[in-house]
Length: 455
Image 1 (cartoon, rainbow, N blue to C red):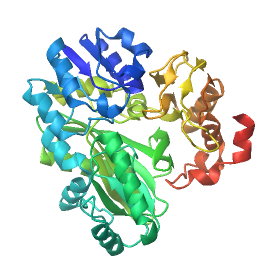
Image 2 (cartoon, one colour):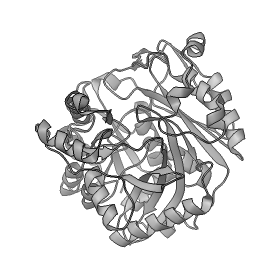
Image 3 (cartoon, rainbow, N blue to C red):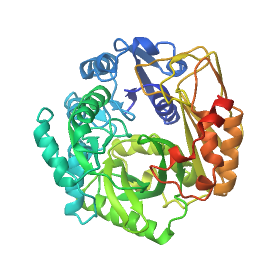
Image 4 (cartoon, rainbow, N blue to C red):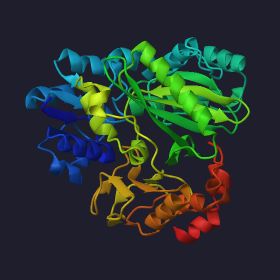
């Protein structure tokens, strides 16, 4: 493996590019017409435009990506997260063209990247999971209605071929189901090129705990501990941390060992995250497997010292876990990440525009910033509105929280609105500081008037 094409954009592309260069490999960046001026493109060895702004015409355009690989002679493709990262058909096309797809084998993207199939497989291996359906017919609302009634309202509509909270729509009753189904289908098609949907029983006030794994092609699996992603708004993660606070460490370790045994037993490879819901009453319940790099991987890197992106590339190339990671890592301190979105912090609507000022904190030990933007760039309405991730790592959770608050207070963004005032409000709240967040708990912490004063 000598040259890698990075089939993504923004912070994901910038992060992967850094790993590729650290490994001494050549890099190929692709971009849409809307992204032509993003700063990381200049750091790549080669750059290719793959189409106009809409994702379906650029970052989801399989023919365009494969065409670039053929032209530039890339050995491998890193899909990042989102877009085509969990598309098994695309992974097979990459392999059929003689290239390496830097992710799990297509069979595992098929079996686990599809959320409905993953639940069925994991339940066969004894993992507890809440009620759900298989993939439902897109145009048969009567069948969808019967399935929802059988599960019992409220239910959650989820894309079978995607992740990241995108396209998930809660449904309170049968009357609102048709409109919600149509909305979820459109979101899934736009984000993942796959409108397949299924239903899941809605669990009240759970925590969202996910376990990070690396695996080689030889049956070896390594757990890199867990992350707590419970601070969400409309199923979009806003704040993540590692390790998970206020949960018995033995219960977490036992679940990590159990998941490692399952993944190793089925022969899973390269990289994956098993997402679980947790309540004190019922314990862990399987949610889904993400067969890709996660947005929030940086906090796991901070507390383990493992460069997950470099490891993913090396494992995909056929190296062993022992060669890539060496000794099993131990937890080192606590890390918290905030996702800075281009959105109105009061109305929570997208806020595209030109970054007239974009000053992010940095240069201090324990503080890390990931972004694909610079001052003067336009934040497009065509893509995910995240403009930066800010990660704080310290010896204790309390110190990491203080560091992150200070970093956000010293972040200056002008030209667009951001969710920073809301994030600060949450970080300062008693509930967050007590480690008691649940996936539905953020809205109750937000004071609109206080945000208006800061926005």
